[in-house]
Image (cartoon, rainbow, N blue to C red; front, side, top):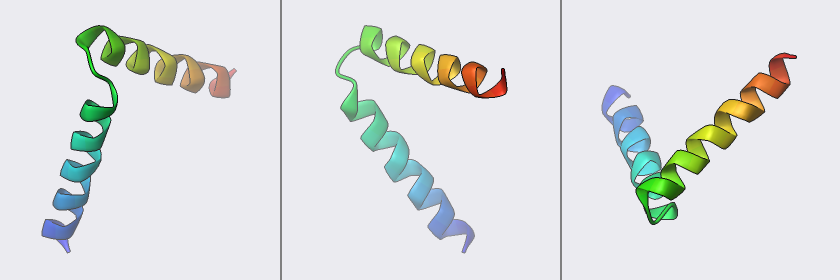
Length: 42
């Protein structure tokens, strides 16, 4: 079960990284996730 979850996490990470083509794009993605979390809290 642990190996399955690790593989799933790795696959999700790879897909996320390939979805944003540049470091700048990754920064925007992270910023938008943080903003969405902040909005959900307030």
